[in-house]
Length: 145
Image (cartoon, rainbow, N blue to C red; front, side, top):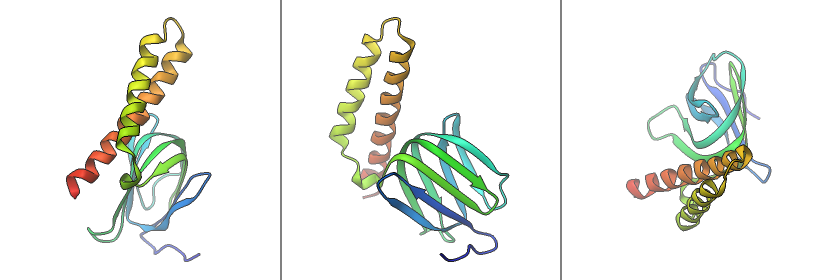
């Protein structure tokens, strides 16, 4: 494994099934459970729970931008390294938009049927958040092509 340049982060994005990204980057934007955050070289160490949304990895130049839609997991940030452990991650072009829309419908139905159950509401919100993030990510691919 190559060492990161002195002002670059070593970024690794993995799921249980595959390694999606492993390279140097100048910055990373990612969805934590409490909102999006940006990580630059020298960032203070932290661990955070990953939310649903897009991870955007910036290279040394404007052409070096990579995006991945992630759903839940954890991120470890060190001053020179970011490790993203996602339960699921897709390149935007891998997202099945019709399936994501069906997932959104399912989540909205779960929301309506949750009744007094806090657990059922939490699960419905998780399903809705994932679906909305996938739809937004897939929509960005349509705009850029």
